[in-house]
Image (spheres, rainbow, N blue to C red):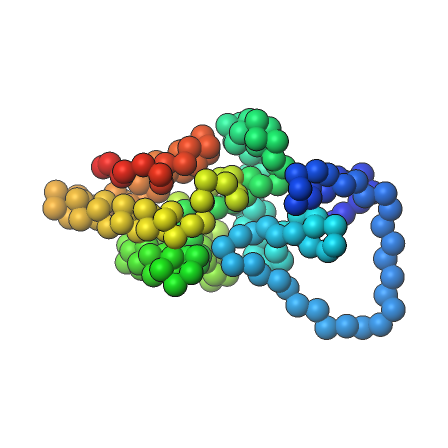
Length: 208
């Protein structure tokens, strides 16, 4: 959890910013509260001021930074958000094979991709159990930094591209007698490079 202080500046829905002048903490009575998870996105806008917030499930941005050993975001993504006049907070730890797809069709494509990763013992990082295993083995191949909310990054078209591309990678590896699991890991690594360069590669035909 990130603790807000009076020096922080928060991003707003309209692209503007709002500064925190002061923080007043009052506990009037005990109340039951719930964590909010928003489908397909780590970020959402809250309150009548439409301030950008982050969900309170597993802190994937924090977990990925812990794995890397630093919280430095890729330079290409920092330059892209600056050029687009977007908040740096949109650079997030992204599941290449998403945790959940957008809509019924997006979920179908995403689940196909997840099953392929599971088939070759590649952590999907979709649960606390998967995260625990990844922390023990260093298997964060399905995670990278990417720019959220642009280029249809969580769309069903994206989910379809990933699903069909991974299926082709597996089929090609098996045809050639190669290690299909390693071929899939290699492809995830190539996509990670493209993501962290700010390239929306899923809008182009897939090529082995």
